[in-house]
Length: 249
Image 1: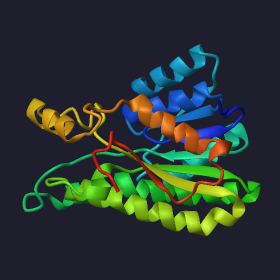
Image 2: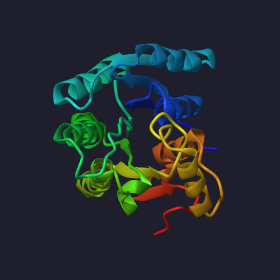
Image 3: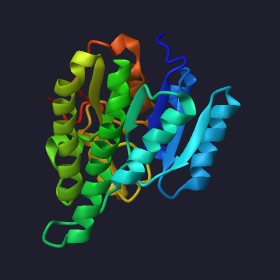
Image 4: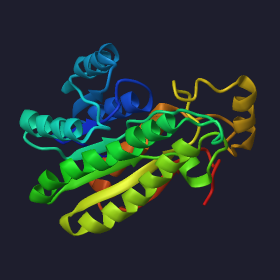
């Protein structure tokens, strides 16, 4: 079993859903966590408390990582608090679904800024301390929608496809310094983001999934924990789909 003992991890958007599951799983493997949220202080504190209750360490930091200055401040606080940042999980994300003919420009901009620009801002900010240490793990949360597309989600799919390009490009830039950059592409996982789906839509997804069910946030978190570990040191630039076989490459 791998361990993340004494590793310092920042998980953006980790007050709920997949982000919260990732934070808890990394903590269970021994990492010290920075829980980030934009406007969910109560939920973030609950996640941190759950980590502390199992003997872990967690600090809550509010930051809108779609803004460069706040993303930079998040990383700086992480380094100041723990002396280093070993693991960055770019998880922050939103949806603003609509057919493109009806999609508001503001909804396009907001999704791209929150989902894609945040990963760019945080990665850029964390790279310098990782380069200095000659070690790091960056794991980006993309989506199977970024691989296959989805009607009514042009903005979300574009942002998640962009994360795939960012992942592969950054992996090539920093690999010589023992920094790996990978992405995890969840399928349909019951969270607040997918809670808007109708029962009919959910049943249709299940029928299309070879494993015949929806995924769990903890299953995504386990994949992230592996990619964050030293056992995954020779894996970089990869996109790992956690989707029950829904989108096979």
